[in-house]
Length: 373
Image 1 (cartoon, rainbow, N blue to C red):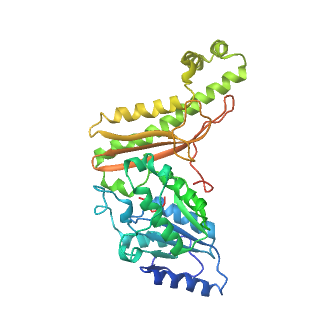
Image 2 (cartoon, one colour; image 1 turned 180 degrees about the horizontal axis):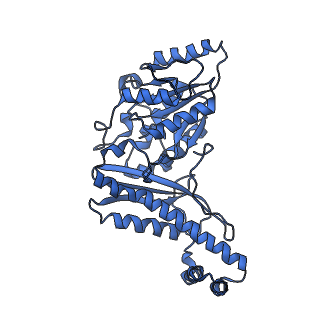
Image 3 (cartoon, rainbow, N blue to C red; image 1 turned 90 degrees about the vertical axis):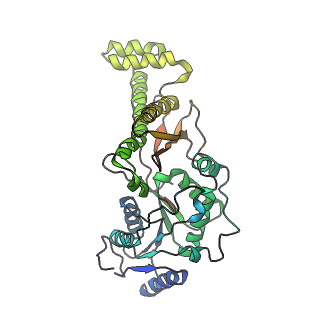
């Protein structure tokens, strides 16, 4: 490759390695070039069709290991994580363009094996089981998907032997499972999460976005708009609680107190909260309602959105949170527009009443894309 990396490693070379032997040679050569004392190594796992979201992962990996480290990007469309009727044959394969992007973002090598190279004896008889979390949400919609994903991630971790592996927050359930696998099975690797990268209109970057027609793309924007509506509803309601709590007094007195200081709209909201009783409009119920309203409108668009799920879940196990929940959560959505299935999510924090939080922030490097789209 002749292009110049944005953040090159010290070796100044870039390699495409299609076999396990080639990969091991590249890693061994890196150690030799570093006089037997190599720096840290990192892997970014992808299914190819790379875009700016993947480039962000590669740049994060390069920054993490430094100029003396070694960054390998894997490009492998894993058949084990595609179910019947899914888009395995349709999935885009753009290796030449992927090599250019990976090199420019700072990778030292791209490991792009064939299916026979990864599974030389055919489909493996022994696989990683995703457990209960793997049967929820994406797992319920795509049975066996997470078993196949974890199996290939485990195999690629063994083959690349990295100190750190970088994944995107867009596939939050997948990443939670990878973290759990690494912890439960004692993989000696740091799992590093990187915030979701979005296009200017808010749509989460995905290799599948290229399948959307202009009209379908307009409908697909409902996914991110629904997430932002839930986030904004939570922020507004918790800001209201914080103002009302600062004025003191029991809940029934807060609407009157806010009205007295000119907070007419806030007073109306406070009255609504008071009237809602146990529903607690500042909690998960309000977030679900705000997101669902946007998605419901999109189901009547032309072309329509076909909703798979919208869920507000505990990030530790992806179970739905109760309406009284306080703490970190993930608001997740999956839907089809035309023939294209898309997913998205956003992290939220439900603060204890009276604490001024409630903003959704993208999960940073200490958080939880695997072999992702």
